[in-house]
Structure formats: structure tokens, C-alpha cells
Image 1 (cartoon, one colour):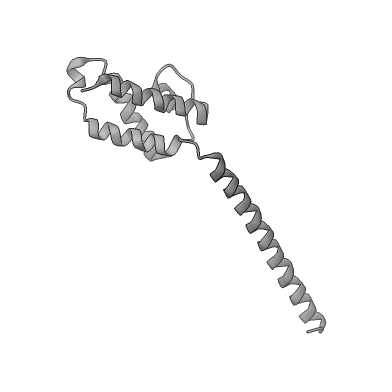
Image 2: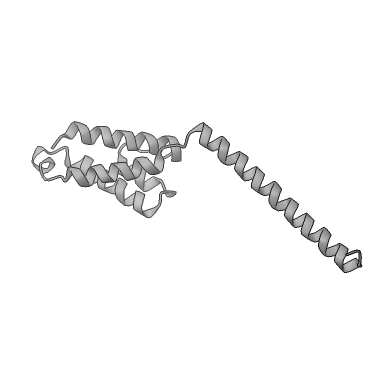
Length: 122
């Protein structure tokens, strides 16, 4: 199969692992073993890529690789490791702050109504 394409995929996942999780190592396998924060499905997909990287070094074994499976594994790794955009992060922060403030106001209002009812003002 196309060993250049496999090397590009593993290089991209390796770079994302280094950027997002600080995983270090000379090979993708070493980085995956060092990145404990990966979920099981992403770790498995990265393992498939690491194995493909190792097997692609031999032309005879490279012919046996399933490129569809390697492509799915690459897509799963990239989807998890790709950083979300700055705009999405800012919207999420604003939403989190708004929800916290509204929830706090609801709790304070419920406490004030409960206290007023308990004291006989309502």
C-alpha cells in the first residue's frame, strides 16, 4: 500500500499527541504508551496506526495492511486530538458563566422566598 500516506497519518497523530497531551517519544507507539489521558477507543486507534507504521517499513508486510481500517483509526485519533477553535472555546466559556450566574440567582431567589414564607411575610 501507500507507505508515504501511512507515514503522513502517523506523523500528524504524533504531532497532535505532542501538542495536546505532551506525549514524547521517538515513535508513535512510545508516545501512545506515555499518553495516559487517552480514552480506550483512541488508544486502540493509535495502536492500529503505530502497528501500521511499523509494518509499513517492510514492503512485503505493507501490502497486507488494511488502508480502510488505518484511515478510520486516523480519523478517530484526529477527531479526538484536534483542538477546538478559539471561537467555540469563548462561546463555551460565556455559556458556562451565564449558566452559573443564573443558577446562583435561582438558588438565592428560592432561599429568599423560603425564608419569607417561614417568617410569615408570604
